[in-house]
Length: 146
Image (cartoon, rainbow, N blue to C red; front, side, top):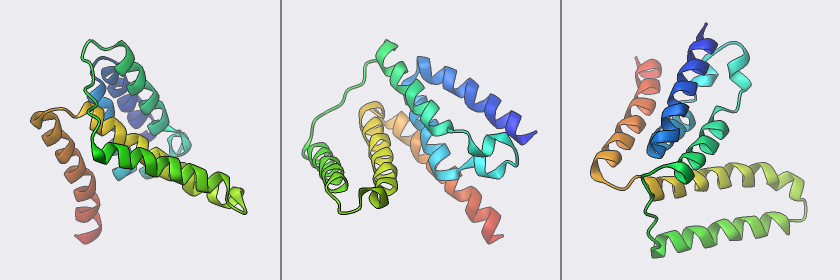
């Protein structure tokens, strides 16, 4: 039952992310921090929800009326250079098969970071993202600390 509820909820929110891409950033952050699919016991445990939402968010960026305002700053240039450096060192590693899973995890995190930098453009959206982070981490704080 949890699987169906989660799949249905993420699907509905994914459709919302097509219209408003910043919602996709919210969903990706929630899925990455809270891992709600790990609280299920069936088919949803292995579904790549975050990848699907990321693709839908990128499609939303392409087709949305609201244009993202990615501002090139020193930080964004340094992060892009770091991503290139991680990729280069992974490819040139003595045993690339051993480093590829770590590269995959880090590049996904940086992709989410670049989506946040491009789509969270005002104070209201930032407050929404902060609340998503607080609720996602607070859930486990209450569940485990209580």
